[in-house]
Every structure is written in structure tokens, then in C-alpha cells.
Length: 464
Ligand code: HMG
Image 1 (tube, rainbow, N blue to C red):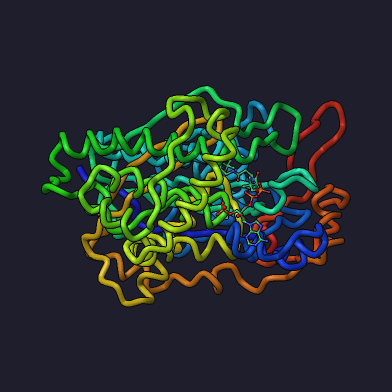
Image 2: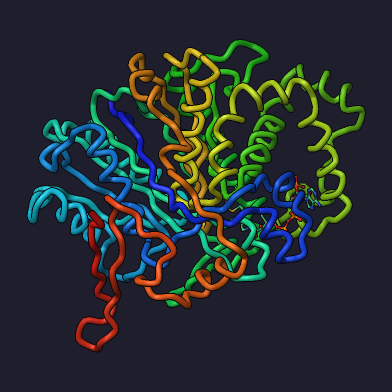
């Protein structure tokens, strides 16, 4: 039985910080954000929004757009790493909000959990729900998988340049209009690591930035190796001499903590695949320098990062490689459209990969590309750490859904924050009722109780 993504909806908060203002305030060259990281704007939550509100707003949009009633939904999963309760799952808040619109008890039949594994957990949730459908357990009902996060780093830290917020919801069923997952090829890797983590009670993560960059690449490559093995063994992909598996993937979507990480990841994967092929000789001739190797090629991530000479040479080699017409072609045709939304919005942790997919669909459609039957590869990464690589094929009916996608109108009119306003919100100095915006037809956070009896209880309203 087929299983896949029938539709996607997004909810992005309308407040944002402009990269140039941010750079100015922190004394950083704006080009570092705009060109170095690929960050133009970072979406910020208002004082009356939390990740549950973002998730519920996205769910309401997809349900209204597809005229779904709660009876049509069998499972509602929320994946997040911005949880505010150690026990009560974010799903329950989301269901509570949706029932304000659809009626109390209307989601009672529905199951689901909150899943956590940094940014990769949404991919595990998609996989589990796709398998629920494939197993014939869904009783003709659909699943909603919503990925929702607020990427917030300490003020003054290097991560602060890569913040963002938003939710993406995917409607899964057995007759998807957008994308059917390829069966039996989903591949994972996992390793106990401390590249990025958020201990209990701490609002912002502890981050080892450069370590996390390299670990992301290594973990995704390990998952890709397994994907390769599985897709060759199952016969999904058949390689001719001189080909790589990447030649058979028409579009790539990578986890995007900042948009340029997508390009870094693509370059890393392509280099490692092409290195084994005759075409690499031509690339090396073009670049004019040999590919550098670390002093200790079997060393740890720390030893590689500590090998300053190798790091500098490798940086230069990567730069020259990404400038070749061969790489540029892959980048422009297979990846670039997925990066557009990330530049405008920032890191959405669990939702970043899927915002990228959504972006790729909209902007490739605008280029009048025929997407029917195209294979899309996904590279998901979550710190701590785990990666998942999987793929799917775009369905013939995709255009009926994609034609209405419009990022700008779906975000709505945005309000730029001054750096002062941003800092006040970042430091949580304002109460929900002191919000900057008062959006209509959206769920908002009303208050969080502080008395001993009901501490942490959250009240939400649908703002009519
Ligand atoms: P940094 O170390 O300050 O930046 O912070 P940098 O020195 O690496 O510079 C960034 C890029 O800007 C480089 O480009 C520079 O060359 C360039 P690259 O060499 O990589 O191509 N640059 C400039 N370009 C033009 N003009 C200039 C200029 N100056 C520099 N003047 C870092 C970067 C990502 C480490 C930091 O922002 C950070 O710690 N971010 C948070 C962690 C993160 O995003 N890690 C990514 C991988 S881990 C992951 O994705 C998981 C995550 O999403 C969490 C989860 O799973 O839950 C984070």
C-alpha cells in the first residue's frame, strides 16, 4: 500500500528580525549572515505564542484548506524540541485548541504522541505514521504530523545568528497527491553525542557549533551509505558503470539550521560519491589542487577540527569544488529552490527540512518544471545525534496542490522588530497580553498559571 504526503501547510509567526539590523547590533559583518550563513530574516514568536500555538495554527490551516473534519484524522503527532512540559504531550494542547473550533471531544478517537530527537524527530514521526498506513491500520483515516519549534539561542552566542520559529504540518494518507515514500529504503544512523543539547530547565541549548556542523555531515553520510545499500538491494535504483546513487535523485532536501548548511551538505555528499568515479579526475584537473586529507584520517572529529592546516586547505578545496560548473548544475537544479524559505525564516529545528521541501515544490513549480515522477531525497539530522535518509516520488496530481502554494501570502504581512524589541521578547520580559500583534482567526496563548496547585497550566484562545 502506498503512503505519503498529501498536503502541507505552514504557520510562521509574523514578527521577524532583519539580518542586517541584527549584524549591526552585534558588530558583525552583515555579509557573514547573508552570504556566509544564508540568513536574511529570522522569524520570531510574539509574547502570546508558543510552539503548541504554532502547531495548532498549522493544523487548523491544513484542515480548513482540505475541508477535513476531526473524523477524517486518525493520528495527530507533534514533533518538537521546544517542549514546555516533561510529561504532558504537546499533542494534548494542540487537540485542546482544535476542539475550540471543532467542538469538545471531536478528536477523542485520535491517537498520537509528542516525539523528541532534536531536529530529526519529525522524520521518525513521518516514518512511523507512513508505516501505520502501510500496515492497513489506519481505517481509511489520515495522519497529521506536525513539526513545530522555536529555535532560540543565548544572546551574544554564535548560534543567535541562526534563530527562527514556525510549524509545518503534513497530511499523510494512502493516496497522496504530493509524494509517495519509497518503501524499504529508509536509513538511519545514531550515536551518543554532545554537539547540541538542552538540559532540563534550560531555555536555550548548549552548542558546540563547528563540531555540530561536521557531525551533521558525518551522520548524514552514514545514513546515506545505508540508504544506498538498501536502494540497490531492493532494486529501487539500478546503477550503470560510472554512476552514483545521487544521479538518480532529482531533488535534495536537507535539514537547514541555516540555508547554507544545505549547500555544505550537498557538497560533502557529492564529493564523497564522485571521488570513487572516473568523473572525479576531470574535477581535480579543473580545480588544480589535490584533495587534502587530514593528518590523521582515522582520527576523531576533534582531531580533524584541531588540524588547522587541513581545515584551511579543505575549506579552500570545497570553495573551488562548489564553484565548478558540475557542482553548480547540481546545486541549481536539485537544491537551490529548497533554500529560499529558510533564508526568509531561519532555523525551525524539526520543521526546517519540511519547510525546505515545501519551498522546493513552490519554487520549482514557478520555474515551470514538470515534477511528476521525480525522486526527492531527504537528509534529516538531529543533534545528539541521529540522521535519517529516505526518499519519495512526486505524484501525478501534485500540481493541483502546489499551484496554490505561496509562501509570502501564507506567512502574511510581517512586522520587522527593532533590535531593542527583539531583545525584550528574547529575554521574556513581556506577558502574553503585551503582544506586538493581535492576529485574528488564530490560536493565541492567554496565560500560564503560576500558583502551586496549577503551575504550568496553559490557557489558549481562538482569537475571532
Ligand atoms: P561561526 O562559527 O561564528 O561562523 O558560527 P563561521 O566562522 O563558521 O562562519 C560562518 C560562515 O560565514 C562561513 O562560511 C564563513 O566563511 C562565512 P563557510 O566557510 O562555512 O562556507 N563568513 C563570511 N562570509 C562573508 N563575509 C564575511 C564572513 N565572515 C564569515 N564577513 C555556526 C556558525 C553555525 C557554528 C553558529 O551559528 C552556530 O553555532 N549555530 C548553531 C548550531 C548549528 O546551527 N549547527 C549546525 C549543524 S547541527 C544542526 O543542524 C542541528 C541543529 O539544528 C539542532 C538540532 O538538531 O536540534 C542546530
